[in-house]
Length: 121
Image 1 (cartoon, one colour):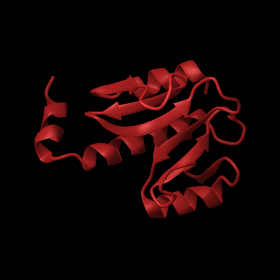
Image 2: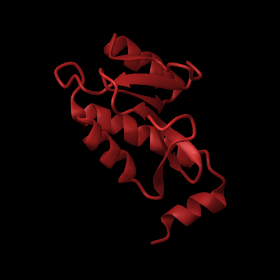
Image 3: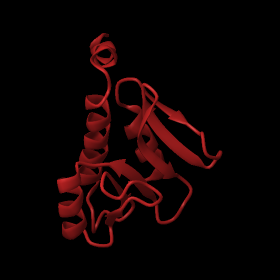
């Protein structure tokens, strides 16, 4: 997955926005003010921090050793750092599933009134 593809996919979700609260180089993708992805799009290798169910996080790290690791500078229980520009080790399909899972986890944690706002056209 290229940086442009990662950015476009993160922004494809309902109410997703890109923000730069830490520095101009660090893209933070949010839904209604809550972060679901964090990346430095110009870094090589290209990695992204994604929220993850704690049980799934452990499983993914074991299945994709070295490509999915505990979240760098994040709560290691709930966040993974995923290397996304190695399709031979982690196909784009799986990267997209992990990004979508992160978005869904963040949305599930929003108050009901905010979740309902996302359902409106």
